[in-house]
Image 1 (cartoon, helix red, strand yellow):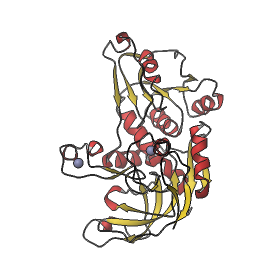
Image 2 (image 1 turned 60 degrees about the vertical axis):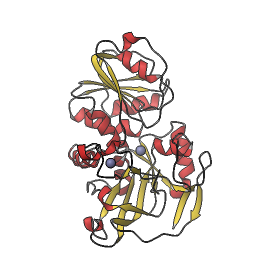
Image 3 (image 1 turned 30 degrees about the vertical axis):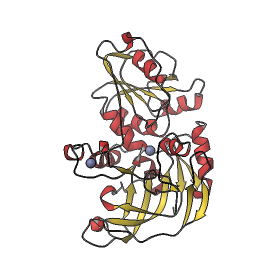
Image 4 (image 1 turned 90 degrees about the vertical axis):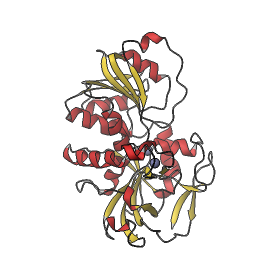
Length: 332
Ligand SMILES: [Zn+2]
Ligand SMILES: [Zn+2]
């Protein structure tokens, strides 16, 4: 099969023809139709996340059609050949540790991740554990469904940690933000969108999606916020977001990697404000969000690329030039 391979961090992906093994017990083989491009892919390629599998097929927002099942009895039969499935970042967990046993499999120390410790979806085929794959809302085609699988899921987990905050700030208006904003509006919240200074198109995009206000990340919003989510990988935004939230408010960091958070006066945290991160996702998050996405319904804005253009898609994401989500159209 054709794949875009990461040989080592810091190098562009290389188009290669690689052999496809048979699926093992509990696994399914998928003909990949689409794979969305996530900022985490950039962190892996740029060497900001330690110890990726190498060489590696990155990509963890996969939509595909099941083509082959592993030997029966271990869970492969969760899907029939021909079924459409989505595959997210969480690829496997131990099922036995204290985290797994308490509904927090996202924190399992043995967890494996699609497109990081396991091969992912920047390829014509992928082999995944069937227990970590999901049915997708029928209303969305393959390309438009792909961004739900990380931007949507992690965005939704971040939003949940904002509790019942009515005035919600979102720092960084990319793939996750454009989906979270729709859910937040549907829930009756007000959205305040913060972008890079001068990014008029991202601010206009946020307003189109119902944001009450959109401005630069160093601006003070017109009203104090009840909570804020920081999707941009910029640690300096954490104290800025704290300064924008009301007493008792939370700042949720939604990304897997961020530049250092600068020191800041305790006064910004005082008043029972809190800062927390969101790590990975659970399968329960996926079931819950995918059902909600169909109900809202969440509409994804995408920019399609061919598989061979993966490096270009990553570069455009790095430069902040993608409106909504970049998606590789593979078999789709
Ligand atoms: Zn575990
Ligand atoms: Zn992701």
